Image (cartoon, rainbow, N blue to C red):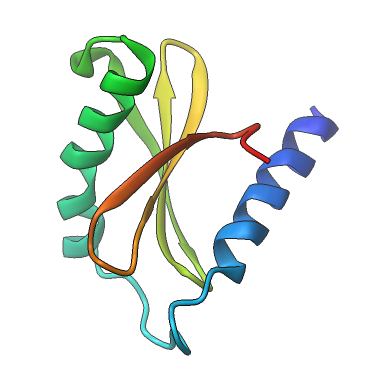
Length: 95
């Protein structure tokens, strides 16, 4: 369990270190909602798990912007919003 928290912390730290300029704004509920389906669709493509079996487990505001955590058939993934507005899904072990 401790290992999982360390890995998640490292991933969030990497996301927070991305250069988005001096990000001082916070994600809005609308921004998180706009990310949901693109993140789920990308996770479905990445994992070959049907999109209807992927859920958003949390919404996190990082120093680098919004991040959704996803559950795909019991495996955790993260989805961040990129500076160009696109999203990127990655495994929690993506270091």
